[in-house]
View 1: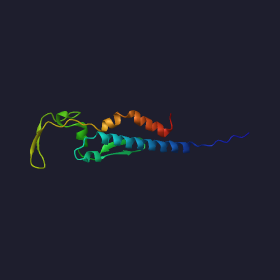
View 2: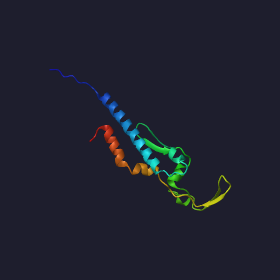
View 3: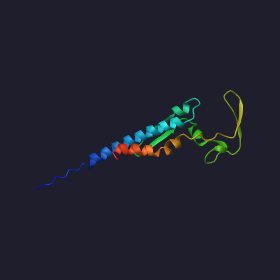
View 4: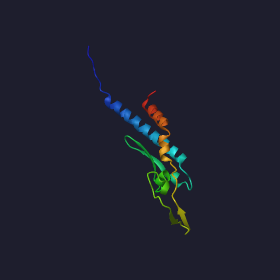
Length: 131
């Protein structure tokens, strides 16, 4: 009697890596969609700037607009984590002056991730073939 052992671990690891990459891409796309649904819309620039990217271990959701963090976290006395406590004035593009104490936070990235954990878990299970 002879026994022949075949090492398929490389193929298995390759299949797992491919499944992980598919799961991360699907999670990123899903999170991007949730964030776009939650983003406040004035001109559409913020919503249109929301995208995702993945690396070997993570999916990231964000926006390329320079003011996204101010919308997400708020400004002035409303800023999460502390902001300017006193009011200020500014001049808009038309020359009009405005007084403000800041803008309340309008989160769209954090809830897109935190409020849908079971969806992401199901995506990962689906790609990895778990029941």
